[in-house]
Length: 309
Length: 315
Image (cartoon, rainbow over all chains, first blue to last red; front, side):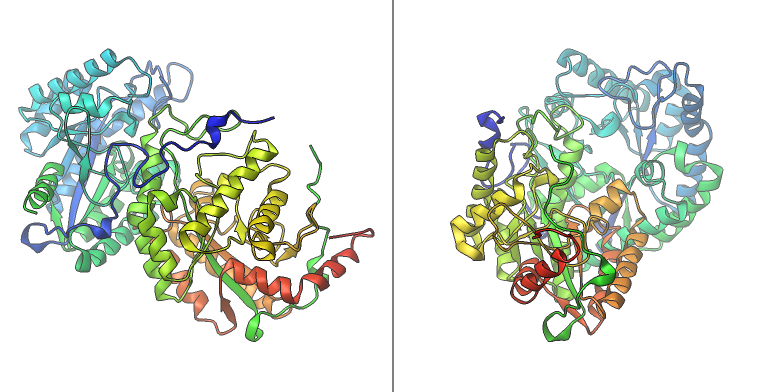
């Protein structure tokens, strides 16, 4: 019994990362960033507007939050639709009541399925970023690149046409990527991607077609992770976000501005028994030293200070 | 395959001889930060997959990278604040990838012990020679970068062979004599150090490392809420501290910079450290110091005591 020789060979064992996507850098070694009005914590509230197809293919895996029962899984299909019909409006009110700016991450197919909703969201003048075609369109290693390119182009153009916005941000369904996703995104005019969760600030990310920015959108603080995967209570969700914000605010006092990305799902936090917790959390956040802005505005603030170096 | 690995004899808690840590302390407390490097594209081990998704598994990879980019500094500052020197369970390739982290830990006189080369290279399927070579590489790497003679082992990703502990102890002797390769963190059978029977007969101990208190087990496997994790740490300490009066106990908090240092979790960890280190009869120490003290003061008596419960020759 033995493994092939390659298992004891380490071709990438050297300084920095074991890939070329970005440079190794510790957060505390970087130039401090300041946000507008000297605010300490940039708050990016990312509201997902998603379509989970009933005829889910699950390739190469079933998307978390997707269908789990034999076809037709009406329970999960309709419960996800609940988010776009009802939960979203509760969340919009909660945000508007305390003046926190959302960014909407929308599946491209929503523009076809629900032009009214797209128009309604576009009228609010909040940033829309592209969340892939639908929740069953998973970008994955080894997939057909023509297919992937079509998904990316179709999703972006559907959202650009419906919103009149440039749509320059990207969050993959299930945050998943193929080997080529960053290259294809860059080629399609995307300027930042939220899939990689390895930082509390934006950072530069390489593609063969030129650089884009990584905008880490915490998965650990995602409502789906805390409430649905971990089955933590709503009270704990609030406490966890408050603890996170408090820590980042404290860090910002000595290390420069920080960023808190909150990914939220109307089908989860928009439930009647949960919305009050979100309202309480947003009310608390609004009282902190936060810079409430779209993902793009946060990114451009960061980018200008990189260039100024 | 064996029904029992044969490392230790049965040894009932109710009948243990009393042990005491230096200065009469009741409980030896250590924190074991796992500082790991996971490869984005490791060779596929035939027995265990590194990532659930096809390459590139950006989600799992990037949160672990978060630990080194962001989490390490946070955890190190908290440990500094409470006077705890980390005992690092090290993916030793990190010495090459991220020497900045190694330098900061070395400056603080933290302990480095081997956790393999990468946490994406598993022991499963290795020949004896391959595992020996991997272990030797890891111990030599620690020595080259830190000057420390590696004393402890936690197999990479807790992937073992039947010979893992034997090989670690033997390579330790080859490299550093009786100063190298003296303890393991791979066994979870006890709240005290215990003698481990190896084929070489080398004096060697298991040091309690605790999966129950491990942040990854708590957060990922058992999915506990952060504040509850903090409470678990305190509750665990309270009981071991009380029993330390009659037994002498060990408590370890094994951490990961991508778990405990996340912004929503650090507070719970810090509160537990504050609580634990505020007690007088706690020896705040490292894995190696516990192993060395035990080997010098209690190992021989413990071997004889254990034998009395096992009816035949015992280690």
